[in-house]
Length: 560
Image 1 (tube, helix red, strand yellow):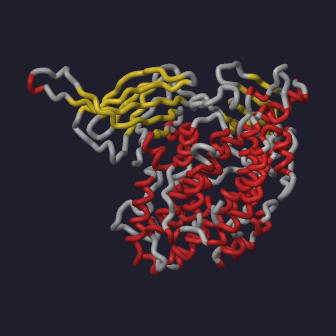
Image 2: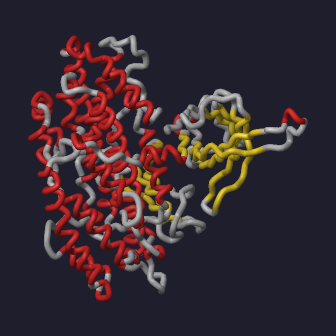
Image 3: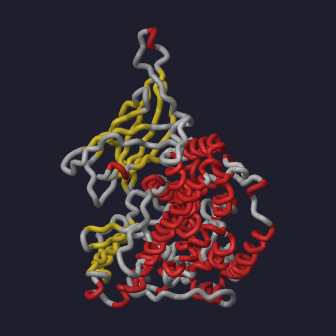
């Protein structure tokens, strides 16, 4: 089941309560004249506060009054949706009521109504669960060979670490993993390196800009935690003067405590290193969930599954698109069965609960799903390489698919029914994905052809450069003393002083190193060897614009 929300009107007042109109689209909650209501709660880090109970009208709309929002803070609400049955009304007993639960949902409310998102329990299950690929969509034997070569040595190290656990410390676990296999570059905890992380690595989450002030924010206030002293809210603020970015402050706040503001020129070297460590750790978790898993795996996974199901090999679009979607379903299925989610998974390392991680991922999937209005990240400096190259890559893909569709329109038209079914299945899976063909009887080059090009460019951008540029820059996580997915006790020892490895448990260090190194070790198929020849020619003509990224190493699809 997919449930989405359309926020039709939101008061922007920050002085008093605001009202928002939500529409629930769900096969399990169809339009009905029955009496349906929802209990509304405001989610807080210590629990939830009851706000009110509202009616759901026959067209599945409900209006919620909530506390005012601001540009810097969102509210998270939870809904418990139920249906009332009054079986004895005809006997003069209308007060006797039976309640039937229909479902639960969570909503993020922002002062910008376009950013309001509704997520249900069923949506979490639908969008984070990947069915086992059919035989035709499973990888070849050589794929499993590459996977074994990447992960085999790391599994052996992990087993040795566990067998001799009584002898191990985090320092020894790190040394064991460094003993053989590739050695990944270190990026020492300095402000310039932190800035590079925020611009170009796995930590490169979306930034906010107000004039010359740039900020990166990891706020966990409305997410469920397993541990209270592990995952702080972190805000890094930088100032831009001409083409130069300089970090001015790092704000750190553990749950229920006062915010600390670390000013680089007014703190000790050890405290500054700890602030950088906590920033890297928080942004690495957010980056893994959003730019790697949501935008690089699960969102394009929806496009891949529906495309390979609906589009036949005879369709001209298949030859120029399918190769960028291969193996994606399998790696997403593998990730959903113990690597990313569930017991023994990398998600268990963070303080976030499984549900919180799922909510974080789905919010980002919804935010990035509108291919009609997609805009690449705007570069904010000459060293913002991921944004600079990302913009070039997306524009190249859009020009390529636009030209292909225009030149082959007459060959594509006979397959419009397939394209309509693909469009419908995408929207059924995630209703925030626009329809390529809103009307099955309308299929013009000027309108539907343009929408098709935007869709294909967006998908291939996600499975090639966007995924590769985040995946390949996870080196931080191969050094537990540089970033930890499981920082504990605020990264301090009994005397309150910063400690190496941030109090990361040795079991967590073991799992972090095993998975991060396996992912980086994997030899994925390269774009330069498997991309469509016409697209490769276009990119080779501008290959210098991809510097400093080694174009010869870019993946052709999300297969790891």
